[in-house]
Length: 61
Image (tube, rainbow, N blue to C red; front, side, top):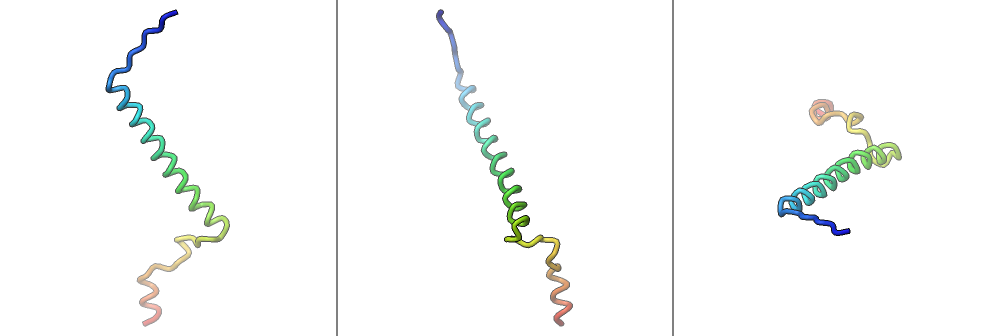
């Protein structure tokens, strides 16, 4: 059985874009879950728990 297949130059570009987009999506997802994991293990404090910088200056003055 003879298979006739052809990939034009645009196909290679599309494959590279799909791979790059997939890697970017994995990186963003990993960053989100990494921050959640650090907060869960209490390695990193919540951003909301820290008072804003404006309140710190007015309290100490």
